[in-house]
Image 1 (cartoon, rainbow, N blue to C red):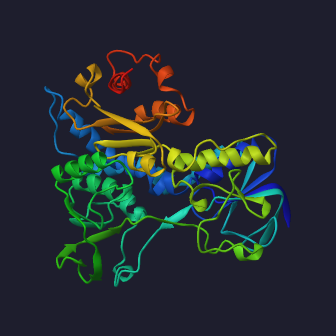
Image 2: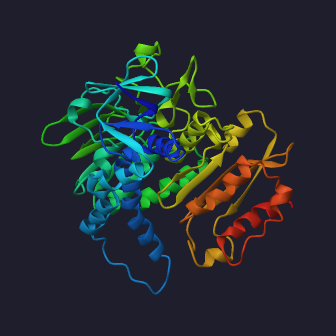
Image 3: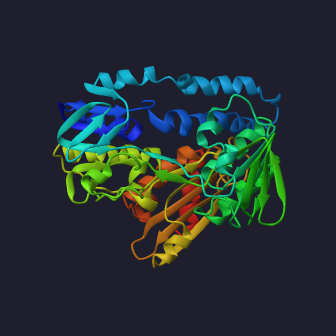
Length: 449
């Protein structure tokens, strides 16, 4: 048995950040990983999907600027660039970052074997201070007859495919579904997206759903709302039977129904913790009843976003280091971006969510590009900026911005929501001219300041 101050199970972004922060502060740390250091985000999710979507975004922006010509997208070149972004599924470039912080990498599947003990293969590691679980999540494949047997794609295959499937069916209209629909349609696939709800990305504002739907259909995606697959079969192709009586023929089918916390098979039963749902944690990221055990990232189910996993990892590491640390951003306060064109950026509550929470709120909307900056970026593109103001406290409790290349605009909204900056103070934060940051001025003027 070898001893460390901390053992981290899982070397995705949450595990990496926690291990690195602890190591650079003098603790001995082992991190256990049986796949690629960097996790899903680096190789099968955030990074490759954005590499696939960037050409779409640029092509649509070029079409808005007179005097520029756009040739056909070179699919092979796009995929080569995607491969560069994901380092051709080789984590050799990630490992030195850990080594520079004194972190020991243990290759293999880690599982708990009792209090403060982690087994990797035939070896057992003892954690003197803490164990941090950062095992992420996996794609949900629902029990639709024939679906599993049809060898469906998940985000892994959809983001690393070496060619565009001629006919591509997507089940699910959430973030993964809409992003992959727009990307592969632009790269040559004939895409059909099936979604059981009456609108896409239904956790966001309705206007965002409408604008993304219009963009997908403009890009040639056949979007079918309010229907579901009830049977899937594969022979020389995939056939999907829908509950409205129609069928879809495809070469590949992507399941984009959400994620399952990575709790199975990590030994939770050895410490009397169930393994059939997300690991419940306190605001210190501790598992209740086990002050030595922490869980960060997707595995705790609180906010399935890469940046939130990194935030939780920093917080947990600081708790282990004995520093005072307080959770300030969680759940609906988590900033989120959908990288379609138009992009959808949001933080805090939607209008519906704020009203359901019993807040006395008022919202204002403006055209995202309805300012001088919009003459140069996103000219004529669909886009709406909304803030939701708690009238009693005069602070913004939610913001959504849609439009061309608006992701970088979200952080100002995140600061306003998390720090509870009063709208009266925001009035004095003068946006520069001529930038689209003036949307903040337009919003505050529309509010009545």
